[in-house]
Length: 503
Image 1 (tube, rainbow, N blue to C red):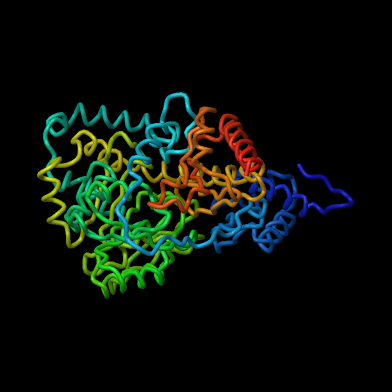
Image 2: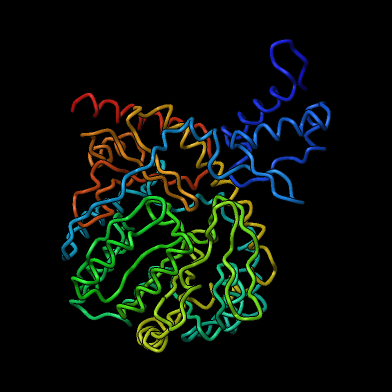
């Protein structure tokens, strides 16, 4: 309860208390705060006092009022000034293609990430406690009991028709309007990406990627014998279209592989206008776009529902982030190949992903039939059963709130424990924080020192075919916030300070 004082009015006391709650992550970004009437009862003040406090917080950039809905925590609010989130520069990779040379290093680092007993702040694998394990167990038992013949039989490409129908419905949330017959079920997202790359490229072809990009893209390129050209990328809005067009005019690029929503490691979101520009550019230069949307459902912000006008025009999903459509939404001739999975939201072990290959559909199905037939029958039946029961959206809402709250907590802890020269990304979704260390501090050396303290991180050098990101590291925020995490971040900060003193 608040008490009247001579030095500070009640509404200001309430505003200060709420801003502290927002800063600490009690009310995550995009989260609705209690109604005026409810807050009045909680704090023992009048409705007019709460209204005045909310109005002041809105003026200061903490809250956003939404008509007939209430007040929500803004995506960019004054409290984030507590975190050193100064805008990172656009990357500047070498402007020539190259063969991938990082595969051995990537494999070596990945071997260390999930070592038993280590605190995983590296691999973007959600902690088991964040996943609906009990519900999935119930659905595994259900389909094993009542659909045993289907569970024990082969599934053939393009996969379980009921699951594909469920996915076609879910794709509307990303403004992608497709049919079940457009979808192919895969063994996770990487398998989907591999199938699409095999169907659309040949060994020796040149593909473009963001810089930095998910290291799995580099591994795939080496596996398939593809050369890579890294494109400068903005940490907020994604790949530079200007740099891409210049590259397209100079090099025989076959395909661009990117993440338009919540990229790894930046967490960037490509605005709708630039998504449309990119698809138009792809048509003009006749290249394919391969979209990895594995974090697409993991926004830290509130999203509104999507819909389609009678004219068939797609209306972008707009929430506090302003752009939540998938790149595939603007595809009119099948050149955008879309890939995603449930590995980050439900279960990595069930290995269920999917792709919408567009004009390469037949090639993807042919590749799959002659390799794996389709994904595991038990997994497909289980996910189909789970989606049918309507559990998924409730789970996602809870998961989004957790990671949104974690993002703020991680950022504030990093500001507290790391040297002030440290820069921290401001992702709008996903599980990654991208961190620029002080000048001269090597994340590769930090990786080895952290491993000795039973802490796993991912050094920035893995996210490029060059050494350009040696000063960066990526952290995973998809785990419960507890004393173990706080102590690990404090230890990392101490190690960074020690390395900085040796420069």
